[in-house]
Image 1 (cartoon, rainbow, N blue to C red):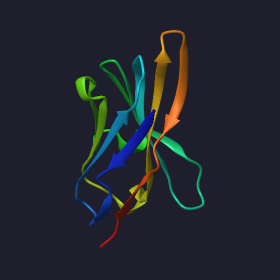
Image 2 (image 1 turned 30 degrees about the vertical axis):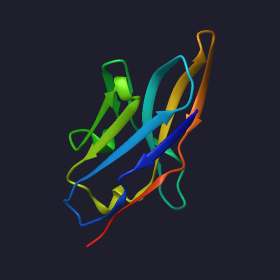
Image 3 (image 1 turned 90 degrees about the horizontal axis):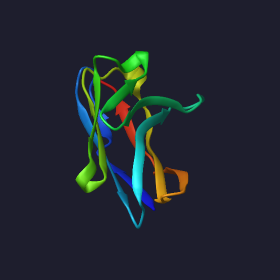
Length: 118
């Protein structure tokens, strides 16, 4: 199983970016898909997650970021609006995935850089 992100880049404050992540390989079910981020010198933190149709957001991004899933294509998206310099970080896709009905593992993507700067 592999998770591959795309969509990072450089954007000015107040701008928008959309991150995408696709899960590929052989597996039974994708349970939860999430986005984490890690800024320089800081711990990795949960940004948003979605299990089924239920989204969950960090307080710092509520009202600005939207997570969504395309279950048919095993994809998760993060629409980021009203970006702030403090949103600058490497963003990681994370999946709780069952390769078979009786097992569930965590998988991480390689990360994509998001830089918010004038």
